[in-house]
Image 1 (cartoon, rainbow, N blue to C red):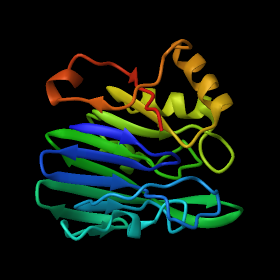
Image 2: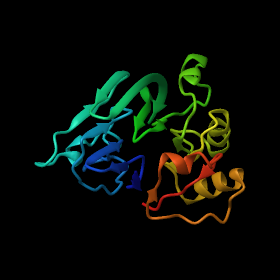
Image 3: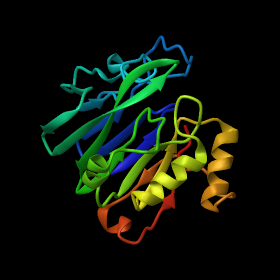
Image 4: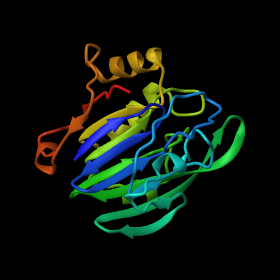
Length: 208
């Protein structure tokens, strides 16, 4: 599986002919984040907002896009999904964010989305067991502060931690919390299930 980062909470994951994307940034988004367009088989949105639900960026004549934007259980080809709804506040408005647990390429992925409270219910924590890769918001404000995010990743015992939704200062704080201040960003992460077996809370910063 190959993972690339496109800013905000926008990620592309590819294995073979299957492409999935998390929280695509809409073309006209209030954050004024740059966005990219590519074809995907499965698109996830954790919160109904143009910063995170730009599904038109994932449309392609060569792929039929299946969109997932709410809690529940889904199976799309070889992608298995369980979504959990949690309350959050974004831009001062009470909303619902969906935490996604995705089985893809034999890898257990947890995408926390627009999470602002690390106190996830025990029922959800229990379901999010044996986490291989966690996508973790760390920027503060509308999402988790870096120290909160770091502690939650430890609680979930994630093997690989990929931070998202941050500015330069927040990333530096997070890396200090993790004890890897000099960690350099990489353009992409190419990873297999067997690679994850050797990891324990390994942080990977992807260049957007």
